[in-house]
Structure formats: structure tokens, C-alpha cells
Image (tube, rainbow, N blue to C red; front, side):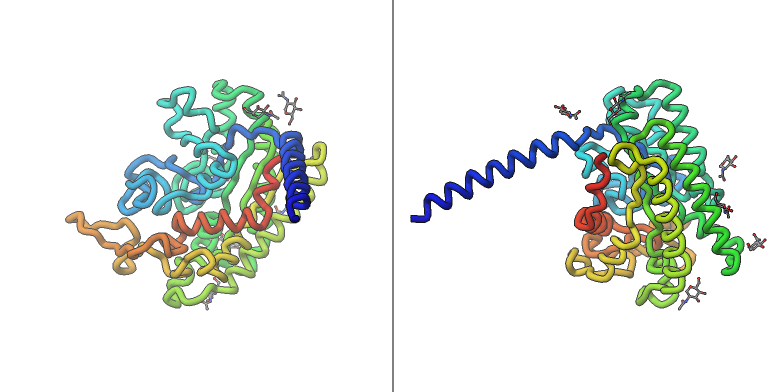
Length: 348
Ligand SMILES: *[C@@H]1O[C@H](CO)[C@@H](O)[C@H](O)[C@H]1NC(C)=O
Ligand SMILES: *[C@@H]1O[C@H](CO)[C@@H](O)[C@H](O)[C@H]1NC(C)=O
Ligand SMILES: *[C@@H]1O[C@H](CO)[C@@H](O)[C@H](O)[C@H]1NC(C)=O
Ligand SMILES: *[C@@H]1O[C@H](CO)[C@@H](O)[C@H](O)[C@H]1NC(C)=O
Ligand SMILES: *[C@@H]1O[C@H](CO)[C@@H](O)[C@H](O)[C@H]1NC(C)=O
Ligand SMILES: *[C@@H]1O[C@H](CO)[C@@H](O)[C@H](O)[C@H]1NC(C)=O
């Protein structure tokens, strides 16, 4: 008779499960709001309609089905972090004036595509100004102290700063000191966000910039530029991790670290090294490209004729355009971050 051991293991399983639930309830604070800062990896519609490619067809074709201000065919990093926290994506700062109270419920997104820690090649508020906007929202009492006490922040920034550096200066010798000043300013910024009462600040590290289609176009999207990855991204990420570790040692409250590095670099690389695990067929070739060098994804000519090509299956491509992942790409990165036990550390 196998019934008795079966019953025993069933009881054991039930005890185990109920025990787990208790532990979760004790350690799991309810995170009810998400505040978002940075660039196009995080922006969900802050740039005014008509001022960026994110408002042109075929952006948004997968989600929400039309262009809506996201730099992808669908969901971006912010949407997946919100999903992980079991909340809707927070509303864009741009539309706060038209927002009903229930629209403010999940926090607010202050990220603007194209921006950086410093001035970039694009217009738009730098991260310092975005934090000023957040401070303004708090002064306007859009959120209570308790709201902020139950919130986390997501920061995605730096890529556009390096694009500007490369175009405006480009000196390899000058790069380390530029990276250092960028990290210094970033640390100042995240300390300021924490100082406004946010419980935890999640900051993404730099994606493998040498794998972006904008970099690999010169070799027909065949291989990543290891120099860009090693010299730029890995140095930036090493300094960022060192600085955040130091900061956590200085400011640790209870058993929780208030700052968390979201490892975009490793998660991008892992997906790009094992694309088929994530049903990705095209790993470096972007889904949407201009028909020639003068055009890009979303371009039309003076007669409104499309000057771009879109792949048949955006779901099988990692990159959407020259710098941004597809929704499928972000989803794969998100799954990887979960497997890497990074997201679990958001809970304090
Ligand atoms: C979290 O939210 C649930 C449902 O709203 C509530 O029952 C629970 O007490 C909350 N837990 C904490 C730690 O605030
Ligand atoms: C951010 O932008 C503001 C307004 O343009 C400017 O005054 C400030 O110096 C900038 N901050 C940084 C760190 O570049
Ligand atoms: C903020 O949250 C912590 C738990 O994370 C709690 O101990 C504290 O009382 C809260 N403070 C306020 C002002 O709500
Ligand atoms: C480029 O960087 C170098 C080294 O930091 C610096 O001396 C130089 O002034 C910079 N040039 C420009 C145009 O910013
Ligand atoms: C960055 O900050 C550190 C420590 O505050 C300082 O020693 C260093 O000179 C700064 N570097 C740059 C490039 O601003
Ligand atoms: C990789 O990037 C570096 C630095 O931007 C550049 O100098 C180099 O030519 C690139 N290498 C290849 C193989 O494209």
C-alpha cells in the first residue's frame, strides 16, 4: 500500500506551502507605486506626439496596436517591471494634468526618450530635471508620504550620454574620466531619489552597446563590437556596481539594500548568446530598418510613402530598430532577469 506515504507527503507539502506563504507575507511589503526616470528604454509616452519616431507607424504595432510613444513594437522595460510588481504601467508625466486620481495609482513615469544624465544630442529633460519634475509632483501633493514609502524607482540612463560623447569627442583617452563623471552624477541622482522617500532605487546598467544594430550595421549585423562592449559598457558597469555597493554599505537600513543594479548587460548577452531558448531567430538584425542610410524605421518621404521595411515576425526578432529591443526582446530579457534572481531583490 502506497497510500500512507502518499498522505504523509501530501501533509508535508501542505505544511510546506502554508509555511512559505507566511514567510512571504512577513517579508513582502506591498510595493504599490513605481516612479520611472531615464531614456527610451523606460519612456512609455512622454515625448509629445509628432516629435519622435515612437509616434510613427509601425511603432506600437504589437502593443497597443498603434503608435503610442513607446520606442518598440510593443511593451518596454517599464511595462515588464510594473508587471512583475503586479501593477499597471505608471502613467506618463506628460498627461498628469488630464489624469483622474485612479490614473495616478501606480506611480508616474518621468523618462524621456533620447535623454541622459548630461546633455545629449536630443532635446528633452536630463535626469536631474526629471527628478525636479518628481519633486514638483510631491509638492503638488499628487502622492502622500505613505505612497512614497511604498514605492520603488526604476532608472534607465547613460546610452545617449555615450552617443553624444562619441559624436562630439570620441577620444579613447578621455573616455575613462567621462565615464567616471557620468557615474558620479548618476550616484548623486539616485541618492536624491532615495532622499525623497522612495524605498528602493533600481538602476539598470549599460546594455552591451557593441551589440546594438547601430554599431553592428557596419558588419551587416553579423557580430558585436567587442571593443565597445569591453571598453565602454563593461567599464561603466564595473564602476556603477562598485559605487552602488559602496552606497548600500553606507545606507543599509534593516537587512535591505536600498539600491539595486539591474543587470541589463548580462541579461541582453545571455539572450543574444542563446536566442533560440527564447524563440528569437534574428538576434542582431533589427526588425524595422530604413530602406537606405538616409531613412530609419518609421520614415516616410514627402509623398508619405513608406521608406522602411518591417520583418514578417517581430516576435522572432530581438531588436526592433537600430537601438531598441522588440517587445519579444524585452520579454526575453525580463525572463532572464527573473531567472538570474535579480528582480526578486526589488522586494525590501
Ligand atoms: C498588502 O496588501 C494586502 C491587500 O491589499 C493587505 O491585506 C496586506 O495587509 C498588505 N500587507 C502589508 C505588509 O502592508
Ligand atoms: C540638466 O539640465 C538643466 C536644465 O537645462 C541644466 O541646468 C543642468 O545643468 C543639467 N544637469 C546636468 C547634470 O547636466
Ligand atoms: C514606511 O515603511 C516602513 C516599512 O517599510 C514602516 O516601518 C514605516 O513605519 C513607514 N513610514 C511611514 C511614514 O509610513
Ligand atoms: C575630448 O576629451 C579630451 C580628454 O578628456 C579633452 O581634453 C577634450 O577637451 C575633449 N574635447 C571636446 C571637444 O570635448
Ligand atoms: C568622482 O567622485 C569621486 C569621489 O567623490 C572623486 O574622487 C572623483 O574625482 C570624481 N571623478 C570625476 C571624474 O568627477
Ligand atoms: C569597434 O568600435 C571601436 C570603438 O568605437 C572602433 O574603433 C572599431 O573600429 C570597431 N571595430 C569594428 C570591428 O568595427
